[in-house]
Every structure is written in C-alpha cells, then in structure tokens.
Length: 268
Image (cartoon, rainbow, N blue to C red; front, side, top):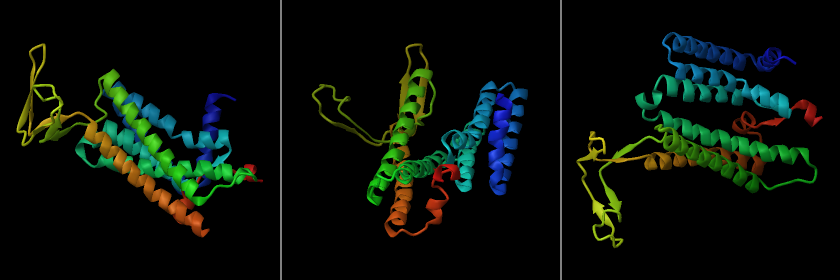
C-alpha cells in the first residue's frame, strides 16, 4: 500500500465521530497556517515542529489500526488538544513564557492521561485473557506507577536536551535562599545558610558578566520537582476515578471516555 493512501486511510478513521473529526480539521488547519508562516519567515525550527505535529495527529489512528484498539473520541480530542497546546502554542507561540502556568497545566494533564493509558494496558490484558484477573487496587497502582514513570522519563529527556544540546527545557527559578555544604570554606561538610540574596553576578572565562537580579538562579531543579508533583496530582485524580469505577462496578463517564479498549473485531 502506498504511503499516501495509507495516511488517507488513517485520517478517514477519525470520521467515525463528527465532533472529533471537526476538531481535528480545525487544529490541522491552524498547524498548516503556522507551517506556511514558518516557511515565509524562514523559521525552519517552527516548520519542523509543525511537520512533527501533523505526524503526531495521525498517531491515534495509526495505533488503532496496527494494534486493533478502539480509542474513545473524547480521548482522541484531548490528545489532539494536548499536542497542539504543547508544540504549537507552547513552543511556536511561546506560551510557556507568556503564561507561567502553561507548563504546569500540561504536566498535570500529562499525568492524568498517562494514568488512563496505564489503566487501559492492564484492562486490555484483563479482558483478553480468561486466566488473568487482577484486583482494582492493583490496576490502580499500575496506572499510577505507569504515569509517574512516563513523567520521570520525560524529565530525563528534558535534562538530556539541556546538557547535550544546550537547550533550556528545564526552566530556571530565581530563589533568595541557598543551603549548601559546598559553600563551607573549610570543606568540612558544614551546612551554610545564605538568606535574602539580592542578586548574583556571573563572570565567565571569556570576560562576560551576567547579573541575576532578585536572587540566585536555580537551574531546573525546582522546575523538575514541580513538574513531577503536578504529574502526580493528575495521576492520582484519574487513578481515583478508575479505582472507584472498578470497586463499585458502576459506569463512569470519565473512565469510559478515556479507556482504550479492544476493537470490536478483537472482542468478538
């Protein structure tokens, strides 16, 4: 099968739900506009980001086709919105800097969504095997741990990009207090408390001087801890919904709309 026809087949699967398909078309059109603008402005980094987003938009349908899965339309819509918010709004339109809570919001949603993915993985195994049954608590713990593992791996990725490609994915915080044994002049391991830092002066070997006004520049540590904390919150929220749903054997709109299931052909 040619790549073009295969991609069209993947996109056609979105037409199963008119609202999700309309949302997909709107976001796709906005990405194409950003792509054209990037080409005209010769901003090839933005162009590459737009191409990546267009490919990621096909990922849900690709997984459904290859793995015989059924992804709920609501979940697909959230995935599209998340990709658009992270890459187009966050990276190209600089929402990470313009709106301080943008990154926090996305990491919280990330924790929520990947808890749903972890929950779905165990659910799929539990449904397809007659000899495989797990307790609601076990499924909840796996979903929570899966979400937190993805969150940690993402922080590893951000740190690697900052170290090896000189990026700034782990955002810096300005703090006014430092507690460190490194500042002990005797190097005896005595903890030194530095309070009310007004500014920090950075001198480079090349003679450049940078002044950090308002305190000391914390490089990425607080940002990482904040990201993991909100990831945990998102994971706990979905895990709670999932546990209650399994424990009470009652339907939940939150879980039903986010639970990846086998396709009808597999279930039959």
